[in-house]
Length: 67
Image (tube, rainbow, N blue to C red; front, top):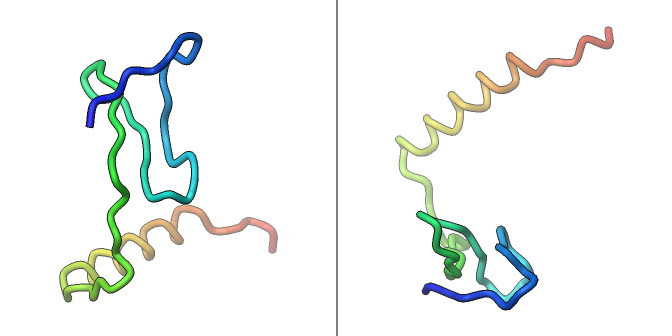
């Protein structure tokens, strides 16, 4: 849903409250969208494998050097 903000607010970004909506800017327009409800989502095997690959890559490049 496209929204128009009142002056002096130029733009909003992110989730502002726990009501399930977030703001973003797309192609110069300010949008408000409903947050997806993924509470009952079950990962597919491809999603689980992708998450595992990401975790291994991220952990490998961000290890602590405090030994």
